[in-house]
Amino acid sequence: MSTTPLVNSLKMNCTTPMAYDLSNSEMIVLIKGTLLFLLFLWLVNTPAQSQSVLHGKITDSKTQAAIPFVNLFFANTLIGTSANTEGEYTFPKAAYGKYDLVISCLGYERKQITVDLSMPDKEVNIVLNPAVTQLKEIVVNSNDKEYKKQLKIFYPISWARR
Image (cartoon, rainbow, N blue to C red):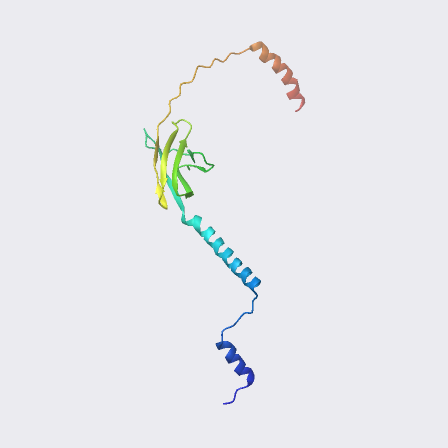
C-alpha cells in the first residue's frame, strides 16, 4: 500500500511531541503567568474553606416564645444580622475564630457571649431576659387659650384651600 508524503508527514506529526521555540524572556513570562493564575485560584479557594455558618434561635426566658427581629453583631466588627419573624438568625460566611457576639432587642436585656467558630456549622440558641423599665410620669396640660388662638389662624387657611 502506497502512501503519499502528506499522509506520512501527518503520521509523523501526530506521533512526535510538539516542541515550542520560546526565548528565555517568553518562557519567564509564561511561568509568571502560570504562577499568578495558580496563586489566584488558591486565594479564591482559601476563604471558602475557612468559613463557618453560625445559626440559631432566640427565645424569651420566661415564655420560651421566639423573639423576632433581634439584632446580633460581632463586637468590634461591621458584621451583623437580624433574626427573622420566627426568631431564627444566620451568619452565612463567618470566618473561623473566637468572637464576642452581642445580642440586643428593645424590651430585653443586652447580652454578650463568646462564640468559638472552629467547625463549618455551629448552632447557638440564645435566651434573653425581659428588661423591666420604669418610666417617670408624664403630665399633659391643656392651654385652652393658646389652642383657640392657633385654631383661628388655621381655620380660615384650611377653608380657603377647599
